[in-house]
Length: 309
Image (cartoon, rainbow, N blue to C red; front, side):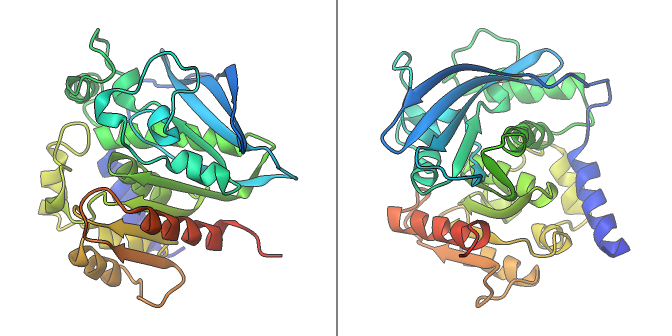
């Protein structure tokens, strides 16, 4: 790896930041339930994701498993939204999440071990707000900045998403050489940054997350906050970031926050339209991708994560 690539990755990691204070803890994963579906078993866990915080995690394991399977982390607001179901049948999905995309279910039915967990706004802030209250995001960003001024919201989101990769990479039912990541919107942002920074991820599928700074809310306190101004002052864009990954296999499902300008950015990053390392689909029908577009993204993951006989 060249020194320029190392320096570029270091630049982005430095801007994302780290907690200044001691943030060490002994990882702990406790199984608390299992639920039966036609094509997979859904297991529920409680996972430590900070010195004094825990997140709920769901993992789907295909029933017809023969040997280790490829795995995909599917970050989002919280796991039921990517499963499209509440497996314990107790508390319904908050209204804003009940029409989201069941990527976790789709990929499990396709033969992947999939994992998703609660996002940082549910585990970090100390508050009595309901899990569907949008103000939790503001509290998360504000409390994180107060406790760890050098750590950005996107940095903490990446940290927590990497704990999902820990679940996959430590499970003997997963082929650790074939791990990918997928997400939509917020989950696409988490998938993009985690996939670019973590070498365990071999392929990324990100739906309408906003490669161009101005096309989405990167300046919100729970993402980059005021540090986005530093990035812009440095003329830092995602094309240089992607070049430093070696143009890691990437599927972008564009529709609203991503568009043809996103494709031009990808071309500047070194991707070509005919490269098997890129899948770019601009359905241009709004933020939510049509089912056929989703499945083209899954096909791309198959190409890079499923070993050919």
